[in-house]
Length: 495
Image (cartoon, rainbow, N blue to C red):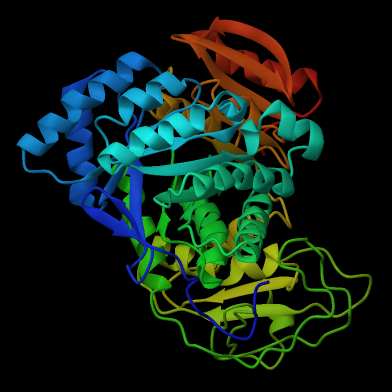
């Protein structure tokens, strides 16, 4: 159970990923993923080198098929010939055969339990192959791609995600293989944080100390994507959870590294113990909004759980620019913090990591960020983005957009910009923009509308979880998405 009274890094054992070691006393490592075709050696090598120069010791590449997995040998050889020691990770989804091939060349293999079959000995065979070369393994659970068996028993819940991970960890323990990392990713920050916390509880009950990889999937781009990632990742880093992180942005992969580095550095030094008054209904794994009357809370230090903050006013609630709905007449609890940053992105990431978790945990009702270098409008936008990322107040269109990888079937970064230009004025809508069908339909399951790559130059449109139009030409897809929104009565004209 999360202890609100003290901050400490969760104890984990070391896992070696090529030249990089995570866990133990090692600092949190940052990483990214290529979005080039894994069969294009030159493009992959160039992008890996850019990511490495940005400061990432670990880079992941998709290997959706055996051909892609085989080409990891050429990529690795080219990098090593150039003197590049970046740790390489193969991302596997559907094919155990691809994982077996990739394990011959890379430093870590990431598999998705939702697409692996335990009853056929596939995991045991992969563990044996990894053991031969000292290759690490990541058990990467995705909220949107749980197996049918797990989904039928648990639904698409945090508990189902934990069940999927634990049965794979049990196999690794039985095989006496401890070079294992675990992740529990979701585009829903509330689901993501609950899943990781439940996983830690489950592992602690069984004495497991596997390191954890953190990330919010499909966070989008720009300031919104950075804030959404910071809210989810920040909540867990503040709990002492996390040994390696990726900030997933629908941008050039190297853009992810400064944000991830900022988060890791922000949580590198925390005070140790705190005096904390526990809310009467706090739960780290179940969202419960506070219900008792409380006066606005003002503190001058960040704590591991409350992270309650300083104010220049005797009544910070009266000055709030952004808040969630009232509590049936109860006086809201406000969180207010003054920052001294000169860069708006840096301010936004820090504030999202510090304050967003309070709203994820149902502990606060209003937010105010103070920094004299920025306008009231800029600060209010950041505050509203934090509330939306924490899923307590939706004030603008939310885009569930994947960061793209070698599986992406179109220019997702440019397409997202075009979709935003046409739809960003819509209120309280969620639009999924996904590169392919591997995680797309699952990860955007709570979106109102979906735009998913189906084949090169072809797009499939969704209304909720239902396919509306399949394999339409991409040049027509945006207009037809707008038409679909109109047909369902969700369109508003721009003001």
